[in-house]
Length: 138
Image 1 (cartoon, helix red, strand yellow):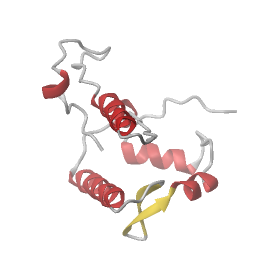
Image 2: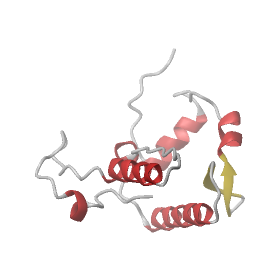
Image 3: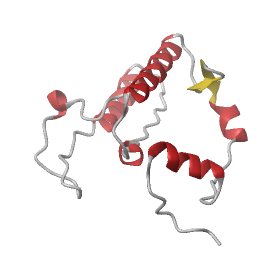
C-alpha cells in the first residue's frame, strides 16, 4: 500500500496539473512496481507485481475517522499477511473480524458486472454520497 503523493523526494515534484487543476503527483506506484520487479530479476527470481491505481475511482467525499481507521486496519493486515509469507490473498472485514481471503475464492464467486439499477449499486452511491451519473440499462 502506497499513499498517493509519496515519493516526491525520490521522483521529484511536478509542476504539471491534471484536468481538474490538481497538482500531478509522482507515479510512485509504477516506480515501486518496476523497482520490485527489477530487484527480483537481479536476484534471479521472478516476481509478478500487480499495480492498481484507484486514486480517481475512490475520490468522492473526504475520508472521515471511520474511513481512516478502516484503511489503516486493511493496510496493516495486508502487510502482516505479506510479511508472514502469504500471497494470493485480499484483506477484508467479515463478521466484524479482519480476515485474509484467498483471491481465487473471491473471484470465483464475485459477479463480473453490477446492475446500475440494483441494490448493491444504490448502496455504493449511498455510502459514497455520489450522484447517480450512470445511464439506466433498459
